[in-house]
Image (cartoon, rainbow, N blue to C red; front, side, top):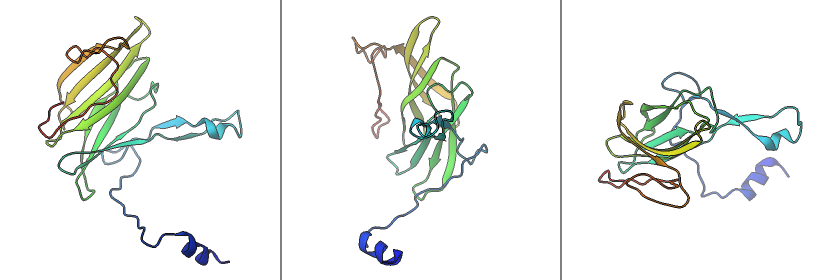
Length: 181
């Protein structure tokens, strides 16, 4: 059986793929910063060499049909100082990016993010330090150009949830069309 016939028998003819947006990997402002993380399933083949793969991308849509992309950096990547949220129009064209500072810490992770209609970004972060032994939630609002508009911080706790003091164990944020959290 030829490959041509095999494809015709196994493929659904009504399926089609469409490229929604395209951006290269690199270090220029119009490129996504490469972030590599260890991928242990490959290391089982050769224990002395751990393979690295590109980190995943988190994609969000806003109420105006814009597309926003945040590259996922490993939680413990000491060399990373900044990241970007890339903004695309509904046709897939790059409209700019918002710089996001990565604070030097023993543990830093952006749990979730959202972008409202005007382009302001909301970040839910978790940051931890060994000295003193402290882990905190942070909720930050950043203007599209990178200016911090406000920031709240609260202690991570599995026993108590208090949104006003940001005390608790938060992993997700939601923003409605009125830009309310």
